[in-house]
Image: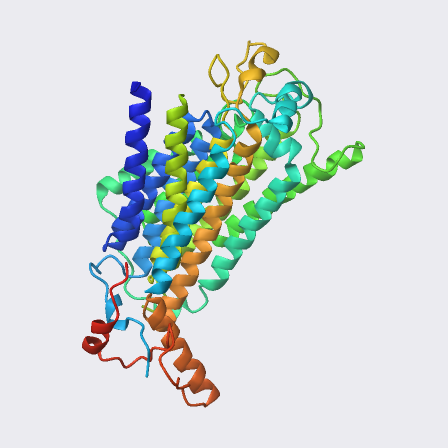
Length: 96
Length: 232
Length: 166
């Protein structure tokens, strides 16, 4: 296995781990950061696929602006302080 | 419970189907008929060294116009949903400005960000980048000072003017092509010399308009989201 | 790039799409639904660019003509510019959609004070019922995905509903 292949495998594993973190982290702000991290990793893939235009867009819009949007929304939603949400208290079930 | 497993099964099955579909033809060797035709003629007919820019603005300009309208609709809808009409009533204590390092750093970054943003936009037809990427950098340049000093805010009215002006320039450039018996948004003025800053006809003008419009829209969108909550 | 590397990238892109779809349907928190949407979008974009990648014996070249080089000698080994232009559009639209979804979530949070979808639905239904002046509907036997009502005894309910990923 060549070195380039090894780098790609490691990157793919990292991106998938970051995606899982975005879905399963209790801290929603951390999940937003993980989403921005996924965008950053994908933009590296775009560079490898000879798409510098798309890589620049993904890094600026997906990682930068998207992460900023998510963080601002998290601030307005008051998610800074919530570590473990009160979600399970309202768990849906049959009402009667 | 059943829904949960069903959904997981659906997602996995969907991914498997796509996998089979994409591995059925050799990776790294697409047939690419239209793409090859564009690659062959873009350099001589459009004159943009960056062929992606040629596709986005020259071959598919009306698509980009549609994209700009979608972005405009999204920004308008965000403004509508988060409307600032009743914000003045419940506004709590004004937020404190950031620390010294933050403010000084923002002052230092602002001209640099402006320079990088305009560089990316203006060189959109030569190097990777263009109106969208440079517009985002411009939006960041204008939003950062507001984040560092929450008391000073940009006026939405000025940004709406910039946005309307840029959109008008884009459409007028497109309509100008009609006067010369060309299709709507077709590049004018000839291809020029490949690789020169002033080449590719009206593509730089179009990309400048796109950059200003995207920058103003995204900046106003970010400001709406960063404004203090009305009812919390 | 070897065949193996391209296959790995394909698996990564499909993994992102699958994780995004799963999270989109299974998440109960509105904020996490937006995150899952962003993940699926990134995966789909990677898939599209991957399809447009091609390489000849000399490797692959980005679709940008260097100044001073002959265009005709470069174009036969350039990658496809059309999917790249498409993805450029898709990324920008994606962030607009994300912003709109986030603002709707903020509005819903302001109106109902929660981001949990089940609680939101329950509160909306009681709102609608009270606005219409009708009694809340009673079901005969518990169907799948029944109607939760706001006053819930937390302990009793947590026992019979298995935990779902947040």
